[in-house]
Length: 521
Image (cartoon, rainbow, N blue to C red; front, side):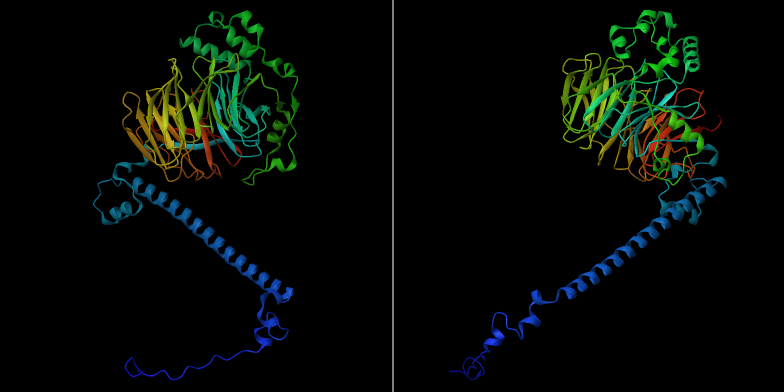
Protein backbone atom coordinates (compact mmCIF):
# COMPACT_ATOMS: atom_id res chain seq x y z
CA UNK A 1 0.00 0.00 0.00
CA UNK A 2 2.87 2.31 0.65
CA UNK A 3 4.09 1.96 -2.95
CA UNK A 4 0.73 3.17 -4.43
CA UNK A 5 0.92 6.53 -2.72
CA UNK A 6 4.59 7.24 -3.18
CA UNK A 7 7.85 6.23 -1.61
CA UNK A 8 7.75 4.64 1.77
CA UNK A 9 8.48 7.05 4.63
CA UNK A 10 9.56 4.21 6.92
CA UNK A 11 8.38 3.63 10.44
CA UNK A 12 7.50 6.64 12.53
CA UNK A 13 10.14 7.74 14.92
CA UNK A 14 9.21 8.59 18.41
CA UNK A 15 9.98 12.13 19.58
CA UNK A 16 12.63 12.18 22.24
CA UNK A 17 11.48 13.06 25.69
CA UNK A 18 13.37 15.79 27.39
CA UNK A 19 14.29 15.56 30.95
CA UNK A 20 12.45 17.59 33.52
CA UNK A 21 15.41 19.79 34.23
CA UNK A 22 15.30 21.10 30.60
CA UNK A 23 11.54 21.42 30.06
CA UNK A 24 10.86 22.62 33.57
CA UNK A 25 9.43 26.05 34.07
CA UNK A 26 12.61 27.69 35.25
CA UNK A 27 15.49 25.36 36.09
CA UNK A 28 18.58 26.76 37.61
CA UNK A 29 20.88 25.42 34.88
CA UNK A 30 19.05 26.41 31.65
CA UNK A 31 16.46 28.99 32.64
CA UNK A 32 19.06 31.55 33.66
CA UNK A 33 20.61 31.66 30.19
CA UNK A 34 17.33 31.68 28.17
CA UNK A 35 14.85 33.77 30.19
CA UNK A 36 15.15 37.56 29.49
CA UNK A 37 13.75 38.36 32.92
CA UNK A 38 16.76 36.80 34.57
CA UNK A 39 19.27 38.86 32.54
CA UNK A 40 21.29 40.97 35.00
CA UNK A 41 20.01 44.52 35.35
CA UNK A 42 23.40 46.01 34.64
CA UNK A 43 23.51 44.19 31.31
CA UNK A 44 20.04 45.40 30.32
CA UNK A 45 20.95 48.97 31.19
CA UNK A 46 24.07 48.62 29.09
CA UNK A 47 22.02 47.46 26.08
CA UNK A 48 19.50 50.27 26.50
CA UNK A 49 22.25 52.85 26.89
CA UNK A 50 23.99 51.57 23.77
CA UNK A 51 20.73 51.70 21.81
CA UNK A 52 20.01 55.21 23.01
CA UNK A 53 23.48 56.36 22.06
CA UNK A 54 23.11 54.95 18.55
CA UNK A 55 19.69 56.58 18.17
CA UNK A 56 21.09 59.94 19.23
CA UNK A 57 23.91 59.59 16.72
CA UNK A 58 21.44 58.84 13.93
CA UNK A 59 19.24 61.82 14.86
CA UNK A 60 22.27 64.11 15.02
CA UNK A 61 23.36 62.95 11.59
CA UNK A 62 19.90 63.60 10.18
CA UNK A 63 19.82 67.03 11.74
CA UNK A 64 23.22 67.94 10.27
CA UNK A 65 22.19 66.69 6.83
CA UNK A 66 18.93 68.65 7.01
CA UNK A 67 20.78 71.80 8.03
CA UNK A 68 23.23 71.32 5.17
CA UNK A 69 20.39 70.87 2.68
CA UNK A 70 18.65 73.97 4.03
CA UNK A 71 21.80 76.09 3.66
CA UNK A 72 22.38 74.70 0.18
CA UNK A 73 18.82 75.54 -0.78
CA UNK A 74 19.20 79.10 0.49
CA UNK A 75 22.45 79.48 -1.45
CA UNK A 76 20.75 78.24 -4.61
CA UNK A 77 17.89 80.70 -4.12
CA UNK A 78 20.34 83.59 -3.80
CA UNK A 79 22.21 82.37 -6.86
CA UNK A 80 18.99 82.24 -8.86
CA UNK A 81 18.18 85.83 -7.85
CA UNK A 82 21.68 86.97 -8.83
CA UNK A 83 21.48 85.23 -12.22
CA UNK A 84 18.01 86.64 -12.82
CA UNK A 85 19.23 90.17 -12.05
CA UNK A 86 22.23 89.64 -14.32
CA UNK A 87 20.03 88.54 -17.22
CA UNK A 88 17.71 91.48 -16.79
CA UNK A 89 20.57 93.98 -16.46
CA UNK A 90 22.02 92.69 -19.77
CA UNK A 91 18.72 93.40 -21.50
CA UNK A 92 17.80 89.81 -22.28
CA UNK A 93 14.12 89.77 -23.22
CA UNK A 94 11.57 87.09 -22.44
CA UNK A 95 11.42 85.96 -26.07
CA UNK A 96 15.17 85.37 -26.35
CA UNK A 97 16.00 82.34 -28.45
CA UNK A 98 19.16 81.36 -26.60
CA UNK A 99 18.97 77.73 -25.56
CA UNK A 100 20.83 78.45 -22.32
CA UNK A 101 18.36 81.16 -21.31
CA UNK A 102 15.43 78.92 -22.26
CA UNK A 103 16.83 76.07 -20.20
CA UNK A 104 17.37 78.41 -17.26
CA UNK A 105 13.76 79.65 -17.41
CA UNK A 106 12.38 76.13 -17.67
CA UNK A 107 14.45 74.87 -14.77
CA UNK A 108 13.43 77.60 -12.36
CA UNK A 109 9.92 78.14 -13.75
CA UNK A 110 10.43 81.79 -14.51
CA UNK A 111 7.40 82.74 -16.60
CA UNK A 112 8.12 84.80 -19.67
CA UNK A 113 5.63 87.46 -18.62
CA UNK A 114 7.42 87.92 -15.27
CA UNK A 115 10.88 88.72 -16.65
CA UNK A 116 11.34 92.48 -16.77
CA UNK A 117 14.18 94.93 -16.89
CA UNK A 118 15.86 95.85 -13.64
CA UNK A 119 14.74 99.47 -14.08
CA UNK A 120 11.11 98.49 -13.49
CA UNK A 121 11.70 97.06 -10.03
CA UNK A 122 11.07 98.98 -6.84
CA UNK A 123 13.68 99.58 -4.17
CA UNK A 124 12.76 98.09 -0.80
CA UNK A 125 14.93 99.11 2.13
CA UNK A 126 14.81 98.68 5.89
CA UNK A 127 14.61 102.10 7.53
CA UNK A 128 14.25 101.17 11.21
CA UNK A 129 13.80 98.20 13.51
CA UNK A 130 11.91 98.49 16.80
CA UNK A 131 12.31 95.98 19.62
CA UNK A 132 10.49 95.50 22.89
CA UNK A 133 8.25 92.44 22.76
CA UNK A 134 9.54 89.30 24.43
CA UNK A 135 7.66 86.85 22.19
CA UNK A 136 6.39 86.60 18.63
CA UNK A 137 4.32 89.49 17.28
CA UNK A 138 1.02 88.51 15.65
CA UNK A 139 -0.40 91.75 14.28
CA UNK A 140 0.36 95.38 13.45
CA UNK A 141 -1.97 98.34 12.81
CA UNK A 142 -1.74 102.06 12.07
CA UNK A 143 -3.94 104.72 13.64
CA UNK A 144 -5.80 106.87 11.07
CA UNK A 145 -5.98 109.73 13.60
CA UNK A 146 -2.63 109.75 15.39
CA UNK A 147 0.82 108.97 14.10
CA UNK A 148 1.25 105.73 16.07
CA UNK A 149 1.68 102.04 15.34
CA UNK A 150 0.11 99.26 17.40
CA UNK A 151 1.49 95.74 17.77
CA UNK A 152 -0.07 92.63 19.32
CA UNK A 153 2.18 89.92 20.70
CA UNK A 154 2.14 86.43 22.13
CA UNK A 155 3.78 87.87 25.27
CA UNK A 156 0.23 88.88 26.34
CA UNK A 157 0.80 92.55 25.63
CA UNK A 158 0.08 95.21 23.04
CA UNK A 159 2.41 98.13 22.45
CA UNK A 160 1.95 101.60 20.96
CA UNK A 161 4.92 103.00 19.03
CA UNK A 162 5.70 106.49 17.77
CA UNK A 163 6.75 106.37 14.14
CA UNK A 164 8.65 109.66 14.35
CA UNK A 165 10.93 108.92 17.30
CA UNK A 166 10.90 105.07 17.40
CA UNK A 167 9.68 105.32 20.99
CA UNK A 168 7.37 102.90 22.77
CA UNK A 169 4.64 105.17 24.13
CA UNK A 170 2.53 102.58 25.93
CA UNK A 171 2.30 98.93 26.87
CA UNK A 172 -1.12 97.39 27.49
CA UNK A 173 -1.12 94.28 29.70
CA UNK A 174 -4.78 93.70 30.44
CA UNK A 175 -5.10 90.31 28.75
CA UNK A 176 -4.37 86.95 30.33
CA UNK A 177 -3.64 85.27 26.99
CA UNK A 178 -1.80 85.93 23.74
CA UNK A 179 -2.88 89.19 22.09
CA UNK A 180 -3.75 88.17 18.54
CA UNK A 181 -4.80 91.47 16.95
CA UNK A 182 -4.99 95.21 17.57
CA UNK A 183 -7.06 97.80 15.69
CA UNK A 184 -7.60 101.56 16.11
CA UNK A 185 -10.87 103.46 16.19
CA UNK A 186 -11.53 105.23 12.85
CA UNK A 187 -11.86 108.71 14.41
CA UNK A 188 -10.57 108.62 18.00
CA UNK A 189 -7.66 107.39 20.08
CA UNK A 190 -9.40 104.20 21.20
CA UNK A 191 -8.06 100.76 20.32
CA UNK A 192 -9.46 97.25 20.53
CA UNK A 193 -7.43 94.09 21.06
CA UNK A 194 -8.45 90.43 20.67
CA UNK A 195 -6.85 87.74 22.78
CA UNK A 196 -6.56 84.05 23.39
CA UNK A 197 -8.36 84.57 26.70
CA UNK A 198 -11.61 84.84 24.70
CA UNK A 199 -12.12 88.58 25.27
CA UNK A 200 -11.93 91.85 23.34
CA UNK A 201 -10.60 94.83 25.30
CA UNK A 202 -11.18 98.51 24.51
CA UNK A 203 -8.52 100.89 25.85
CA UNK A 204 -7.20 104.40 25.36
CA UNK A 205 -4.00 105.06 23.43
CA UNK A 206 -1.69 108.08 23.33
CA UNK A 207 -0.94 110.03 20.18
CA UNK A 208 2.43 111.08 18.85
CA UNK A 209 1.94 114.57 20.25
CA UNK A 210 0.11 117.84 19.61
CA UNK A 211 2.39 118.78 16.71
CA UNK A 212 1.30 115.82 14.66
CA UNK A 213 -2.35 116.37 15.60
CA UNK A 214 -2.27 119.99 14.45
CA UNK A 215 -0.50 119.12 11.20
CA UNK A 216 -2.91 116.26 10.58
CA UNK A 217 -5.95 118.51 11.10
CA UNK A 218 -4.55 121.36 9.01
CA UNK A 219 -3.68 119.07 6.13
CA UNK A 220 -7.04 117.30 6.21
CA UNK A 221 -8.96 120.60 6.29
CA UNK A 222 -6.87 122.11 3.48
CA UNK A 223 -7.53 119.08 1.29
CA UNK A 224 -11.22 119.16 2.05
CA UNK A 225 -11.25 115.72 3.64
CA UNK A 226 -12.77 116.87 6.94
CA UNK A 227 -14.41 120.11 8.17
CA UNK A 228 -12.72 122.28 10.78
CA UNK A 229 -12.59 120.75 14.27
CA UNK A 230 -15.13 123.20 15.66
CA UNK A 231 -17.78 121.91 13.24
CA UNK A 232 -17.30 118.21 13.95
CA UNK A 233 -20.03 116.92 16.26
CA UNK A 234 -19.23 114.29 18.82
CA UNK A 235 -22.01 111.73 19.26
CA UNK A 236 -22.94 110.58 22.76
CA UNK A 237 -21.83 107.06 21.93
CA UNK A 238 -18.41 108.22 20.83
CA UNK A 239 -18.14 110.36 23.95
CA UNK A 240 -18.87 107.30 26.07
CA UNK A 241 -16.21 105.31 24.22
CA UNK A 242 -13.58 108.00 24.45
CA UNK A 243 -14.51 108.82 28.02
CA UNK A 244 -13.80 112.53 27.69
CA UNK A 245 -16.45 115.02 28.71
CA UNK A 246 -14.20 117.89 27.67
CA UNK A 247 -14.26 116.59 24.13
CA UNK A 248 -18.04 116.69 24.04
CA UNK A 249 -18.06 120.23 25.38
CA UNK A 250 -15.73 121.51 22.73
CA UNK A 251 -17.54 119.70 19.97
CA UNK A 252 -14.65 117.84 18.38
CA UNK A 253 -12.77 114.60 18.96
CA UNK A 254 -9.47 116.28 18.13
CA UNK A 255 -9.64 118.08 21.48
CA UNK A 256 -8.71 114.71 22.98
CA UNK A 257 -5.28 115.05 21.38
CA UNK A 258 -4.58 118.57 22.67
CA UNK A 259 -4.47 117.19 26.22
CA UNK A 260 -1.95 114.50 25.38
CA UNK A 261 0.61 116.04 27.73
CA UNK A 262 -1.67 115.19 30.66
CA UNK A 263 -2.52 111.75 29.37
CA UNK A 264 0.06 109.89 31.47
CA UNK A 265 -1.07 111.59 34.69
CA UNK A 266 -4.70 110.66 33.99
CA UNK A 267 -3.87 106.94 33.94
CA UNK A 268 -3.79 105.78 37.55
CA UNK A 269 -2.64 102.29 36.60
CA UNK A 270 0.55 103.34 34.83
CA UNK A 271 3.86 101.98 36.01
CA UNK A 272 7.32 101.96 34.43
CA UNK A 273 8.20 98.71 32.72
CA UNK A 274 11.76 97.70 33.50
CA UNK A 275 12.73 94.83 31.20
CA UNK A 276 14.75 91.95 32.55
CA UNK A 277 18.27 91.34 31.36
CA UNK A 278 17.27 88.37 29.23
CA UNK A 279 14.48 90.42 27.65
CA UNK A 280 17.02 92.77 26.12
CA UNK A 281 18.33 90.11 23.75
CA UNK A 282 16.22 89.44 20.66
CA UNK A 283 15.81 86.05 19.05
CA UNK A 284 18.07 87.22 16.24
CA UNK A 285 20.89 87.55 18.70
CA UNK A 286 20.86 91.36 18.54
CA UNK A 287 21.12 93.21 21.84
CA UNK A 288 19.16 96.39 22.42
CA UNK A 289 21.21 99.54 22.27
CA UNK A 290 21.22 102.03 25.13
CA UNK A 291 18.66 104.33 23.50
CA UNK A 292 16.18 101.52 22.90
CA UNK A 293 16.58 100.16 26.42
CA UNK A 294 16.04 103.64 27.87
CA UNK A 295 12.90 104.14 25.79
CA UNK A 296 11.48 100.83 27.00
CA UNK A 297 12.09 101.83 30.60
CA UNK A 298 10.11 105.04 30.05
CA UNK A 299 7.22 103.19 28.41
CA UNK A 300 4.05 103.46 30.49
CA UNK A 301 2.12 100.32 31.38
CA UNK A 302 -1.63 100.05 31.87
CA UNK A 303 -3.68 96.99 32.70
CA UNK A 304 -7.21 98.37 33.00
CA UNK A 305 -9.39 98.58 29.88
CA UNK A 306 -12.22 101.05 29.37
CA UNK A 307 -14.48 98.05 28.81
CA UNK A 308 -14.26 94.46 27.67
CA UNK A 309 -16.46 92.31 25.43
CA UNK A 310 -17.10 88.74 26.56
CA UNK A 311 -19.16 86.10 24.80
CA UNK A 312 -16.90 83.93 22.68
CA UNK A 313 -16.23 80.41 23.93
CA UNK A 314 -12.90 80.08 22.13
CA UNK A 315 -9.80 82.02 21.18
CA UNK A 316 -10.60 85.40 19.59
CA UNK A 317 -8.29 85.67 16.60
CA UNK A 318 -9.19 89.20 15.47
CA UNK A 319 -11.44 92.18 16.14
CA UNK A 320 -12.08 95.16 13.87
CA UNK A 321 -13.99 98.45 14.12
CA UNK A 322 -16.81 99.05 11.66
CA UNK A 323 -16.79 102.28 9.66
CA UNK A 324 -19.30 103.97 12.00
CA UNK A 325 -16.98 103.49 14.98
CA UNK A 326 -19.88 102.35 17.16
CA UNK A 327 -19.65 98.62 16.48
CA UNK A 328 -16.93 95.97 16.50
CA UNK A 329 -16.80 92.69 14.58
CA UNK A 330 -14.84 89.79 16.09
CA UNK A 331 -13.78 86.37 14.79
CA UNK A 332 -13.10 83.36 16.98
CA UNK A 333 -12.10 79.73 17.05
CA UNK A 334 -15.67 78.97 18.13
CA UNK A 335 -16.50 79.36 14.40
CA UNK A 336 -18.66 82.45 14.92
CA UNK A 337 -18.58 86.09 13.87
CA UNK A 338 -19.97 88.41 16.53
CA UNK A 339 -21.14 92.01 16.15
CA UNK A 340 -20.77 94.15 19.28
CA UNK A 341 -22.11 97.52 20.39
CA UNK A 342 -19.04 99.34 21.69
CA UNK A 343 -21.07 101.69 23.86
CA UNK A 344 -23.10 99.08 25.73
CA UNK A 345 -20.54 96.24 25.45
CA UNK A 346 -23.38 93.97 24.35
CA UNK A 347 -23.36 91.40 21.55
CA UNK A 348 -25.79 92.56 18.85
CA UNK A 349 -25.63 89.51 16.61
CA UNK A 350 -23.88 86.13 16.33
CA UNK A 351 -23.31 84.89 12.78
CA UNK A 352 -22.48 81.30 11.89
CA UNK A 353 -21.62 79.51 8.68
CA UNK A 354 -17.96 78.58 8.74
CA UNK A 355 -17.21 74.89 9.31
CA UNK A 356 -13.89 75.45 11.06
CA UNK A 357 -12.07 78.06 13.13
CA UNK A 358 -12.00 81.66 11.92
CA UNK A 359 -8.56 83.17 11.33
CA UNK A 360 -9.26 86.86 10.67
CA UNK A 361 -11.92 89.53 10.20
CA UNK A 362 -11.71 92.80 8.25
CA UNK A 363 -14.25 95.62 7.92
CA UNK A 364 -14.82 97.91 4.95
CA UNK A 365 -13.65 101.49 5.41
CA UNK A 366 -16.97 103.08 4.42
CA UNK A 367 -19.63 100.37 4.02
CA UNK A 368 -21.08 97.89 6.50
CA UNK A 369 -19.34 94.98 4.84
CA UNK A 370 -17.20 92.44 6.69
CA UNK A 371 -14.80 89.77 5.44
CA UNK A 372 -14.08 86.63 7.46
CA UNK A 373 -11.49 83.96 6.67
CA UNK A 374 -11.29 80.48 8.16
CA UNK A 375 -9.52 77.16 8.18
CA UNK A 376 -12.30 75.60 6.12
CA UNK A 377 -10.54 77.03 3.01
CA UNK A 378 -13.25 79.67 2.51
CA UNK A 379 -13.74 83.36 3.09
CA UNK A 380 -17.11 85.07 3.36
CA UNK A 381 -18.38 88.58 2.76
CA UNK A 382 -21.15 89.66 5.15
CA UNK A 383 -23.61 92.53 4.73
CA UNK A 384 -24.28 93.95 8.20
CA UNK A 385 -26.59 96.72 7.00
CA UNK A 386 -29.60 94.40 6.89
CA UNK A 387 -31.33 92.89 9.89
CA UNK A 388 -30.54 89.27 9.07
CA UNK A 389 -26.82 90.02 8.36
CA UNK A 390 -26.57 87.36 5.67
CA UNK A 391 -23.38 86.45 3.78
CA UNK A 392 -23.22 88.07 0.36
CA UNK A 393 -20.53 85.76 -1.00
CA UNK A 394 -19.13 82.42 0.12
CA UNK A 395 -15.96 81.65 -1.80
CA UNK A 396 -13.95 78.44 -1.65
CA UNK A 397 -11.11 79.37 -3.94
CA UNK A 398 -8.14 78.11 -1.95
CA UNK A 399 -6.83 74.64 -1.19
CA UNK A 400 -5.60 75.54 2.29
CA UNK A 401 -6.41 77.69 5.30
CA UNK A 402 -7.39 81.22 4.30
CA UNK A 403 -5.22 83.36 6.57
CA UNK A 404 -6.69 86.75 5.68
CA UNK A 405 -9.03 88.59 3.32
CA UNK A 406 -9.01 92.38 3.01
CA UNK A 407 -10.71 95.19 1.08
CA UNK A 408 -8.94 97.70 -1.15
CA UNK A 409 -10.01 101.26 -1.85
CA UNK A 410 -10.51 100.50 -5.55
CA UNK A 411 -13.20 97.85 -5.20
CA UNK A 412 -11.02 94.77 -4.81
CA UNK A 413 -10.97 91.91 -2.33
CA UNK A 414 -7.60 90.26 -1.74
CA UNK A 415 -7.33 86.85 -0.08
CA UNK A 416 -4.24 84.98 1.17
CA UNK A 417 -3.85 81.34 2.08
CA UNK A 418 -1.55 78.64 3.35
CA UNK A 419 -1.73 77.12 -0.14
CA UNK A 420 0.93 79.69 -1.14
CA UNK A 421 -1.37 81.83 -3.25
CA UNK A 422 -2.82 85.34 -3.03
CA UNK A 423 -5.86 86.09 -5.16
CA UNK A 424 -7.35 89.41 -6.22
CA UNK A 425 -11.12 89.62 -6.75
CA UNK A 426 -13.33 92.26 -8.33
CA UNK A 427 -16.22 93.08 -5.99
CA UNK A 428 -18.51 93.61 -8.98
CA UNK A 429 -18.15 89.96 -9.94
CA UNK A 430 -16.76 87.48 -7.44
CA UNK A 431 -17.10 84.35 -9.53
CA UNK A 432 -13.40 83.99 -10.24
CA UNK A 433 -10.23 85.88 -9.29
CA UNK A 434 -8.81 88.41 -11.70
CA UNK A 435 -5.22 87.86 -10.54
CA UNK A 436 -3.47 84.96 -8.81
CA UNK A 437 -0.11 85.56 -7.15
CA UNK A 438 1.96 82.49 -6.34
CA UNK A 439 4.36 82.58 -3.41
CA UNK A 440 7.07 80.16 -2.35
CA UNK A 441 5.68 79.61 1.17
CA UNK A 442 2.39 80.13 3.03
CA UNK A 443 1.24 83.74 3.22
CA UNK A 444 -0.05 85.33 6.43
CA UNK A 445 -1.95 88.60 7.08
CA UNK A 446 -1.48 90.67 3.96
CA UNK A 447 -1.74 94.45 3.56
CA UNK A 448 -2.74 96.76 0.69
CA UNK A 449 -1.76 100.40 0.26
CA UNK A 450 -4.35 103.17 0.46
CA UNK A 451 -4.16 103.82 -3.30
CA UNK A 452 -4.56 100.06 -3.94
CA UNK A 453 -1.33 99.93 -5.96
CA UNK A 454 0.86 97.85 -3.65
CA UNK A 455 0.22 94.56 -1.87
CA UNK A 456 2.59 93.28 0.83
CA UNK A 457 2.87 89.51 1.38
CA UNK A 458 4.28 88.41 4.77
CA UNK A 459 5.51 84.83 4.40
CA UNK A 460 6.64 81.94 6.56
CA UNK A 461 10.11 81.96 4.97
CA UNK A 462 11.10 85.19 6.79
CA UNK A 463 10.57 87.32 3.68
CA UNK A 464 7.99 89.95 2.80
CA UNK A 465 7.31 90.49 -0.89
CA UNK A 466 5.75 93.51 -2.59
CA UNK A 467 3.50 93.13 -5.65
CA UNK A 468 1.29 95.49 -7.57
CA UNK A 469 -2.43 94.89 -7.86
CA UNK A 470 -1.88 93.13 -11.21
CA UNK A 471 0.32 90.47 -9.65
CA UNK A 472 3.72 91.76 -10.82
CA UNK A 473 6.45 91.49 -8.22
CA UNK A 474 8.11 94.84 -7.62
CA UNK A 475 10.86 94.13 -5.10
CA UNK A 476 14.13 92.39 -5.96
CA UNK A 477 15.97 92.88 -2.67
CA UNK A 478 17.60 90.09 -0.71
CA UNK A 479 16.22 91.57 2.54
CA UNK A 480 19.32 90.59 4.48
CA UNK A 481 18.46 93.14 7.17
CA UNK A 482 14.86 92.05 7.38
CA UNK A 483 13.19 89.51 9.61
CA UNK A 484 15.00 86.38 10.75
CA UNK A 485 11.82 84.46 11.63
CA UNK A 486 8.33 84.02 10.18
CA UNK A 487 6.68 87.31 9.11
CA UNK A 488 3.10 87.41 10.40
CA UNK A 489 1.53 90.73 9.34
CA UNK A 490 2.10 94.08 7.61
CA UNK A 491 0.46 97.50 7.37
CA UNK A 492 0.92 100.42 4.96
CA UNK A 493 1.34 104.00 6.16
CA UNK A 494 -0.76 106.53 4.20
CA UNK A 495 0.72 109.83 3.08
CA UNK A 496 4.20 111.03 2.26
CA UNK A 497 5.12 112.47 5.67
CA UNK A 498 6.72 109.29 6.99
CA UNK A 499 9.95 107.93 5.49
CA UNK A 500 8.53 104.42 5.89
CA UNK A 501 5.86 103.14 3.50
CA UNK A 502 4.86 100.12 5.52
CA UNK A 503 5.69 98.17 8.67
CA UNK A 504 5.93 94.43 9.25
CA UNK A 505 6.08 92.20 12.33
CA UNK A 506 7.17 88.63 12.89
CA UNK A 507 8.24 85.97 15.31
CA UNK A 508 11.66 87.55 15.72
CA UNK A 509 9.84 89.92 18.15
CA UNK A 510 10.56 92.95 15.97
CA UNK A 511 8.66 95.75 14.25
CA UNK A 512 10.45 96.76 11.03
CA UNK A 513 9.78 99.89 8.98
CA UNK A 514 10.30 99.62 5.22
CA UNK A 515 10.75 102.20 2.48
CA UNK A 516 9.42 101.33 -0.97
CA UNK A 517 10.56 103.54 -3.84
CA UNK A 518 8.77 102.93 -7.12
CA UNK A 519 10.55 103.62 -10.44
CA UNK A 520 10.32 107.26 -11.40
CA UNK A 521 9.61 108.48 -7.84
